[in-house]
Length: 316
Image 1 (tube, rainbow, N blue to C red):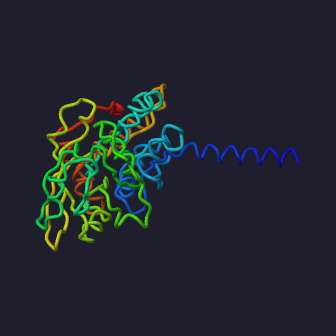
Image 2 (cartoon, rainbow, N blue to C red; image 1 turned 30 degrees about the horizontal axis):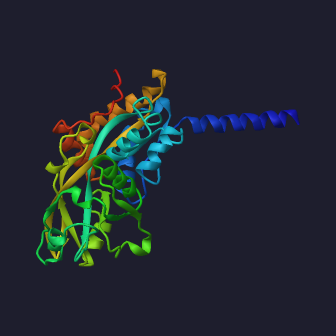
Image 3 (tube, helix red, strand yellow; image 1 turned 30 degrees about the vertical axis):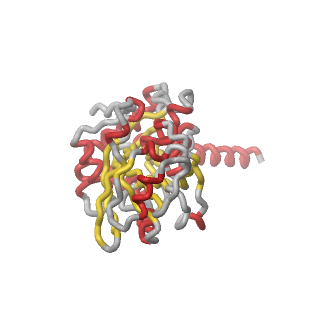
């Protein structure tokens, strides 16, 4: 019996060690950009970090799950939108800081999509400007985010946190409504959706002919250092059968890693950072990788860096 118990203990210990030796890279749903990019990273970088564990891409619920999972030791690394990172750093500073997570690599740009119902009647605002949205011409007028102040705004999924971030950083006092699945094609209120582009939920709303994808005035955001992570962006969608480009604001996706106070525990993240940096051009050019790598490379070559702290590249 004692031998059997000892054998069981050895098996349990082996299982625990095997689990600990995995470097889990959390991504998103199986059909999204994040999951594809995470698998690209595994394909290119599993070998360079293999001494420290097996690099594995796992599905997740997206940016919030990835960030919280790193903080709670569920994931070792993950892809997180920069606005989500800074929102939690501002609202939960004792739990989210560069003591807890650092940047492995910058990734691609994602866009804030603002859709306004045609014939929208705003709450407690002059309807003169808003009446322009009922016109048939495309594209829509450019608006300032301030025009959303006091309005009811719909969103869902990870975009809810992005909408909360806009509300927080720009003092919009919006009433944010989480839209259930059966309400997403006709929510009858402005909608904020954040993601890579083109993004099918945005195209679906455009296709109803009830909504306009409107331009957001990036310059009107001002120069507040707290919001310097927002950038100007442009998206293109089919409207009435023709491609139409709309200016908006963008946020960066970041590859983050959990940070430990003991630097020896961060060597795997430094090696992963070095690998992604070294292979960025090939990740962009490879016919089998996500197209989002092109945006990532463009932004890196333009030297558009995040203000968050980075893992140091591994020494050769």
